[in-house]
Length: 270
Image 1 (cartoon, rainbow, N blue to C red):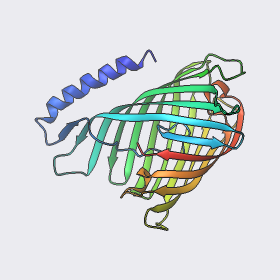
Image 2 (cartoon, rainbow, N blue to C red):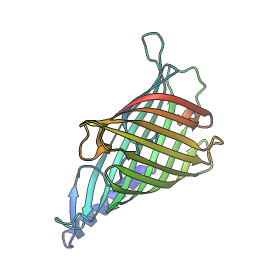
Image 3 (tube, rainbow, N blue to C red):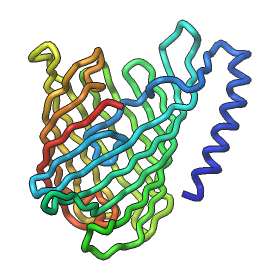
């Protein structure tokens, strides 16, 4: 976390200089744009998201996150052939278990990061710098360990239309407690089928990761469900789905343990 604030300040200063240069060039600069160029990869368990997963063993996983694009560069006022955004994102991931009529909090993972993204036609690219830490809460009987990561991700995607996306990337851990091998690779995709009713669109999604930090590889997360109240971009819809995960535990306190879950989830547009 100690490295992210200087990077944020450097990025803001750099883009302020870029903004001055844009006034003299044939490009458009916009503060606080809506959306972001790289679509959210919602089958990734650690993507920025707003949702709930109800697991079959009386557990609940809640994700509360959002992003905020600070500025955007495009070719010009009437040219949308490419777009580049810089922004900040953050999320909290909370694991709870049912105890009678209560849901004691067991784990809490927090993420904050910066992103630089661009798209041109169907092609998308993303660079992320992220800090994440993980903690056991008072509803857990586990033994806590120190856990902190700073890492970068470099991802590319192909999205020829609003119904399909395929992506891949690599990750590199820059600093970690405890120390772990740094490299990871990721691939995934989402596909929305034609509507079966006016506001109901079936979809499938999958994310696969291989990480050096754990011996439980690959980690696979698969979703099948429906998107409701379908806007022009189906991936922005409210979604209901069945989810299957197997691989390394995505909760930081248990990162080197195996995990297999079946759950029902809901996810909101952000």
